[in-house]
Image 1 (tube, rainbow, N blue to C red):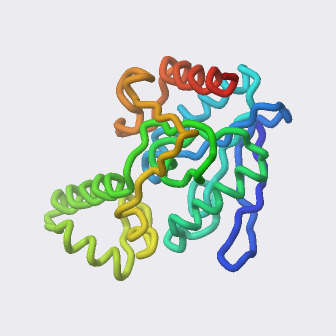
Image 2: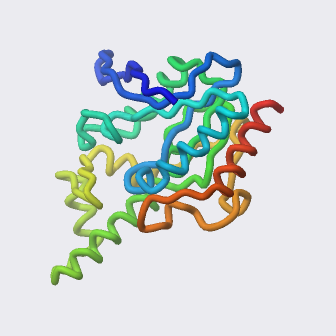
Length: 226
């Protein structure tokens, strides 16, 4: 497992270097992994890396890039947009010569059309926002303040908002409100029931599951060789 740099596009045609974790042995089967978003990315990071280790052992090169504004990126999250992230994923696919893609949860919103691969437990952008808004309202209530979802949404769309420690700009919030994973004949959906057990994104702290990592890696590795 090696940290690499990759040229991530910026608005206007420039680019900046972002990091990626890769098992890059220049093998024929190459998989780009689009991670979950926001707090779910933290909860599922260890699990994602365990899946990558299993894919490497199965003779597949998996690559996990940082999107601008996420993980180790120095770019501000509030300056990002869904379209910008989609462009970043498309460039990463080309840069790493990925033959397939595995998108996880909110990462499924960012997969380019026509790419073969899998959506694992896809979630709508609106659902992501509702969960994070609910967490903020509960925290405010515990502090003795009442906040309404409608008021928070109005603020987010005009000035941006902080949710669960993440600073959303108005554009990213608006993009996510009605975003859905693009369907395609080359994309298969992997529901959590197929992997088994409860989704790790539901846990309060980051976690892992050997059984779930084994199952997801097996589905993908078998499918890539089909």
